Length: 249
Image (cartoon, rainbow, N blue to C red):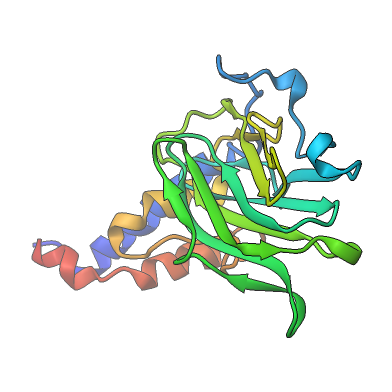
């Protein structure tokens, strides 16, 4: 039967090897557009302006942007923010159209209210998710865009674990006002994200998930330590493994 010391030594060797192998993958691969995306139109933020007979000469702006990095590893998260501004008529719906397979993790809205003014509120349990249209929307009696106020929907998604590095995904957005012909859609809008190769941290921690360590994210206090103190990181990995469970199996 293997001893505690022999198992810990084997785990240390495996963890160190994983770190070295992962360290070779430190940047994104060359981006290769998917067949569905025209990367010439891609950006991390896009704005469309609408003025139509029913808007009484007033302009409305629909903006969709990526919050944070637009390059994400398979299984990672990406956040979009869709904003409607200008004009002045009440906005009754705002919608984010996401790439197929992206799973909603959190949704927030920012609207102007009589009490409290403009502020962000978590609405994850209040949005409408439509798998047929790959959309997440938020509806209401109507939110104003008068006097510099705006209507915004922020959505955070988990990228599929089997997403292919190098693929580029476009997205879309829409809004509806209470005006005649008041629904405006930009799908695609040209706000894109690129799937990149996992970096060293993601490679190592991902390979150790099955050992009961969980995953390290950008918010983890260990994230920066792996590059500045790799030996300390490996030590923490070994100390976190339940060796007794390994010996019993």
